[in-house]
Length: 113
Image (cartoon, rainbow, N blue to C red):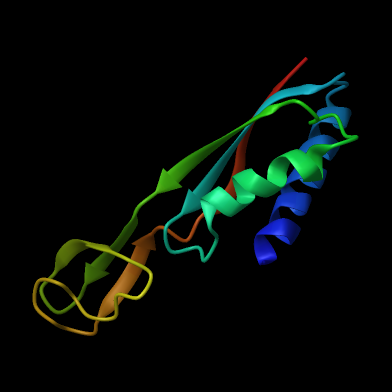
């Protein structure tokens, strides 16, 4: 489960940023996870409590914003919703899809005290 390593990294980054701001603790951590990122949001949520134990994030709330998968089809010049295993345009069947959204995995915001 690579989500454990990802969650540990998010906690480390957040803690470093909080310390740089002179925080005593982190109240809320907001993360964006795209549908195409290859990361299971529920697994990140599951790992968060264990990964944050003993850090400035212990007891904080993890908020995950889900970003849907979107692509542009060069075949029919359409913006389409896609899922991780989508390889062809659902409108015209072309394989000329360019992913535009949904691969995000970023720490968006910290609420500190």
